[in-house]
Image (cartoon, rainbow, N blue to C red; front, top):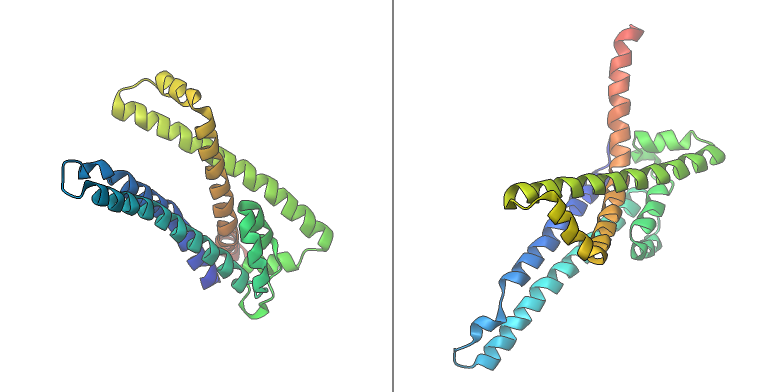
Length: 215
């Protein structure tokens, strides 16, 4: 059984990119200079500029609220203190710690939580360490795959060669490095959210496949 809090947390986390993108699109669509040539240019310009900034920072605020809700749902699903919510400030590293917390809700545990309880402390530590390394490696590969697909998509839709696109990206390497770093952290959190769900699905499939043989 997969906990409802985990499913809701996953849905809220998946909402973060579209919310942030929508805020950026709205902000870019508002051009304060369209007030030029109209009466009360100064007042209209400032109003449009305020609307432009509000749409962007409003989306950032919504993203922050969604992120806090995701962390809070994970904490509540494990019946832990809300003080653990302070780790939300550490981003993906803090969420990794939240994902490693023991589940104190024995009546509502999922397959993954029951699996962890069977492990000794030493094995549990090795498991979490290996999981941490594998999750970051998979997140990096996911970012590389996304980058490759986006470059090929841009080349196909614009007619610009892949080599030219790569040279343009290299010219602004710092900006792309920051963006790709954020993508890696996003994938890390996503993989940690999916971990108990994937484990439960795999365990259920394995049990279903093994049951006919047992008969």
